[in-house]
Image 1 (cartoon, one colour):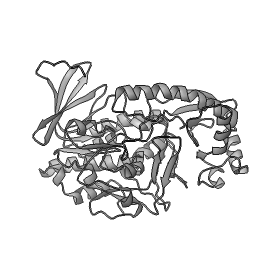
Image 2 (cartoon, rainbow, N blue to C red):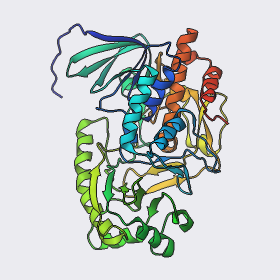
Image 3 (cartoon, one colour):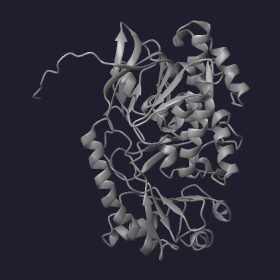
Image 4 (spheres, rainbow, N blue to C red):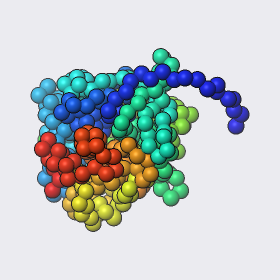
Amino acid sequence: MKTIREEARDIPVRAEVDVLVCGGGPSGIMAAQAAARDKNLKVMLVDQRSYMGGNLTIGLPILAFLGPKGNQVIAGGAQKLIDRLKERNGASDHKACKLHQSLTIIDSEEVKTIAWEIMEESGVDVLLYTFISDAIMEGNEIKGVIIESKAGREAILAKNIIDCTGDGDVAFRAGVECNKGDENGGMQPPTLMYCMRGVNIQKLRDAIVNEPEKFDMDRMPKEQFIEGKFITVGLRGRINEAKEHSIDVPVARTILITGLNDDEIWVNMTRITGTDSTKPESYTRAEHKAVEQLKHVTRYLKEYVPGFEDAWVSHRAPFVGIRESRVIVGKYVMTANDMINQAPFEDKICRGGYPVDIHHSTGDDCTMVFCEDAYDIPYRVLVPEKVENLLVAGRCSSMDHEAMAGTRVMSTCMALGEAAGNAARIALEDGVKVSEVDVKKVQDAIVENGGILC
């Protein structure tokens, strides 16, 4: 590759803070709030977009607040966010689901407003429209990050940094060992969510309940669709028929999520294999290809799925949602066996209830492996193996390919973010490194805020 040499220059320091949170998605919001909990520290959050919320804003439901046995396993700051949304008619109850453990519908626009309120109440300094371009290192310690914006190239110095970018951008720049995908590097394909209005949801509901042999649902009984919000995963026969008639549906299953409005459905059926969100050319291709797929999916829905005859596309999500990219190698790499066998961890900082849900890197289907009960997630998955003063929370935490397929959902990511924020704060209060923090104090802070650890 042809290269040029950039001249050395002095970089202005925009800010010096106690805790810097990079990424304002589900884990980042929770991390910043927890780090600023007592308002004794200067906390800053940086994000590349014009709003906070990340995948909370793209039309996805939040899965697995409940575990396999129907009890709530995620609470704390995540539940308080839902409570605030519900006060404004911006969230549903947690509805049990045989496939996803539970389903919580949210208003993606209201999330953006509440995220700002949480940051203002917590005293967090927010900087948007800003990219992380490098890490500032002294030996094996991270001391800050280099940012890029329309103001140019600047630095933010911090005592502790939490990487909530989803892609492990800070960790990667800091030299943390990272992995991608399965043994062949294959990653789960992303999806561009989009919304359809004018859907006769009762007609769709009746078809699933009254003709289950024709409008089949994977694992989910027809009773699950009689009332309330629901998600469909099935109608394989309908898709096969559409494909026989030259409609290019990119997935094997019809995944539809009822919205908060009575005629609203969010469609989770685009699928762009071969995407690497850490490469801009690949991510750009995904956006383009998803828009093309949307046309075929919409035709399929209108011609083959009851209730969509008069529906129209209302709007698309602001970006393609990524299921998998970089994950770090931490002090501990969590495995699917840990989840399936409910391995106990003394340093647990949250519990997860979502199954191993792998959307295949090739083809059009997925594999799900279910756990009998909720599983512990240890603090060590947040701590890079070699770099100090850094925590990594969200789907880029230290998991293998299969485990990440279960922990990537937003409920779990929010709990991981809250744990990281508490750990960063407590480490500074106690004058220790985040790798040496008293995990019992972190656990106590989580429980004190309503979190569930048992």
